[in-house]
Length: 132
Image (cartoon, rainbow, N blue to C red):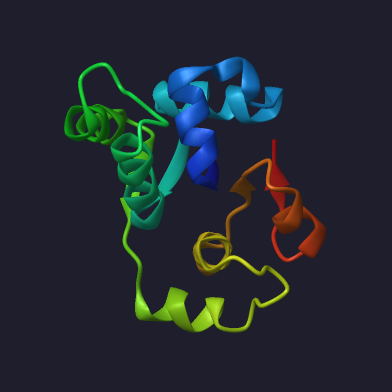
């Protein structure tokens, strides 16, 4: 079974315009929906998605709460809380300037997983394996 952590934009794009998502990432999301892969969803990504909904940048048909419920009820998706270990690991990742991105990368590193992301800064850092 494949395990990975997902970045915020990958979740939003899969829900709103999956053509924007890279082929390997799309396949992994499909595998997770079928219970054949495990995708870890950082609670930080859910916070960022909630803010995107508030700002009108993402509009799930059933609303934010229902969208999150449906996502996390799928067999291959599991929320991962922000822990002290993740925060401490992120503190050493200043090659990535954005705090939220450091925390997402730290989550992937803490879980020993690649990160589903198109973020060029994260990829250029070389700190975590990227799936896109």
